[in-house]
Amino acid sequence: MSSGTQSAISFNHLFPENTENFLVPFRNIVVSDIQNGMNLNFDLVEKPRKKKISPILVLATPEDAEAIVDIYFDIYNGTYPYKEMEDVKEVRQMIESDEFEWLLFKNEEGDILGCFTYELDFFKRMGYMRGFNIKKKYQGKVDVVKACIGSMIAIWTQYKDKIDIWYCENRTAHSNSQYIANVCGIKPLAFLPNKDIFLNKKESVLLQVAYSIAALENLRTLNQPKIINSVSFCYSYSNEVYNLGKAIISNPNIKLNLSKISQLMHLLRININNMKFDSEKIKLSFEGFKSYFEFKHNKNSHNFEKVSYKVNSIEELFVFINEFKYLAKIKEVEYMECLISAYLPEHQKLFFKLGFKPMGYLPSWEYNNQTQKLEDRILFNLHVSPVLSEVHLINEAKRLLEKLEMTNIKIR
Image (cartoon, rainbow, N blue to C red; front, side, top):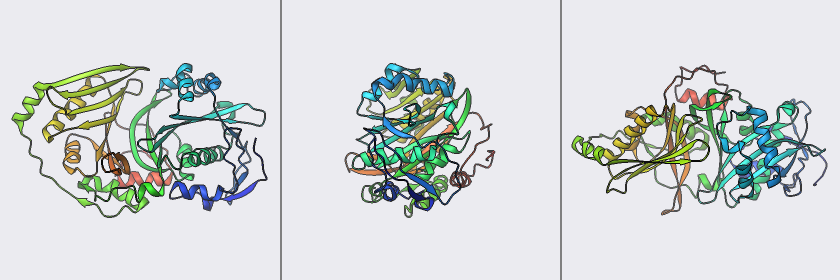
């Protein structure tokens, strides 16, 4: 295992604007060697911190799958909504896959303290960070800030030429994970009210994102965003964070052809494919048309997400959205979300008119294979029941909710 003397890192060097700036202060301090075991040879200074276990980072092997599943059961008592993380065979396959990197946190004695997962999409140049978990017996004893920083050093260094966007969804039952992510420059950009269920309770989550310099500069499309006024609030927040430039405010006049809508409703087809772990893929289409509206139904969290769609008219989109909402009602879904192009104000306005609210502006979010550029997206969502529980937020997330005018939520 790598070793070395402890170096001091100031908190002033953290909370960076991009992934490259995050790595700079650690360049000559931490040896990124998760293959053999990576020691975190630095101390965070200029802020009072209790002395805790500095974990050693190692890559998980397929033989660690059972231990990882045990961590999830230990923390969530068998209630974790994404059941693939409670299945040893599935976890083993993920560890073996080139599309995942799975880290373990260990102490000097070799005991497993926790785990962390990176899901990699090389085509979209995106990485999804999930499952930052510490066993109950070690919670409060492990330096989780250093564990998170070390994880980012290891994985962001390894994939700096392949991944430009890293994102995660953090719970709001507490603000710990939000803060740890923010230390690494993973900034809150969208609010997802009542999206998930943790420990059998509905809970809102925050979408937090970190970008490379390229993602926000030369890879981002030069097309100027065209947004409706209701989107301007979340755009203003993201613009303050990333200096995106001026957007065009548009108010399109949507005129629906009722006769065409009636015809489309008769041609509407629904295809449902059951997937593993209590989820299903649902696809809406029209007989004889290439248009579609596809999404995932997570039965454990009672949500619809991962929407993709293609339409040739506003009437087609109108029928799809209404069917989307109808299916949510009959399947007792409580949360729906969809990413809408920042250059199609007609689509934005239609979603808004049909009850969806813009809850975050995501620059450089979707890769366009034709132009080979990254395009902005707006996260619209709709939640059925009110947000009853308190949400615990870091200051940056509080500013986001202020911009969104979420005055009906109790924030701590």
